[in-house]
Length: 111
Length: 115
Image 1 (cartoon, rainbow over the protein chains, first blue to last red):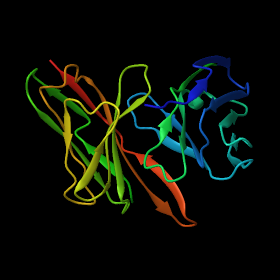
Image 2 (spheres, each protein chain N blue to C red):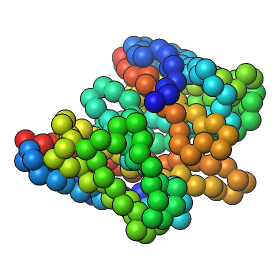
Image 3 (cartoon, chains in turn blue, purple):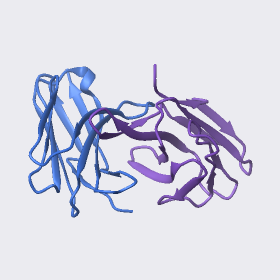
């Protein structure tokens, strides 16, 4: 099935640093969703985006819906140890019955 | 509280046995989904259902079966035909909330180990 190109695949950063990750698609999407998954748990929805160019924040997290509708970005500011996990992007086209997921970005933080 | 429950959290079965994973949601969502996740990997869609008594195959449906007799429930059966069933299984539901926004939520997952 179709997949999104999510990068980077992994990140190793120091506590306090900012983090950026992105997803790109060959198809246009009407919805972009960002999830975080911790070990042994289900993904938790962080931010949902519904309009091209939309910029939405959730605490230290900020996500943007790309103008072309083919990409999205997630930024985490001033990282803390509890930010560790795998971040997934997901997109949904108009009328689509299912989401398309990226492969995930694994975030590791050194205290 | 509204949400998605999956049970059990851990499941062990002998090779060759069928096993059914439970998924229940009280979010009043129409659509439900089953995903498989292998260690260090992303999510792969097994089956999904948009309405009661109807479901469609996802990308890796072989060796799995589902039913959707009730809106709240979407059980997944891992059959003996599934060649590599050991994995983490995630159930999800999707629906509209206020403002006509469509969001998908996940359950806590079931880790299946076939011995």
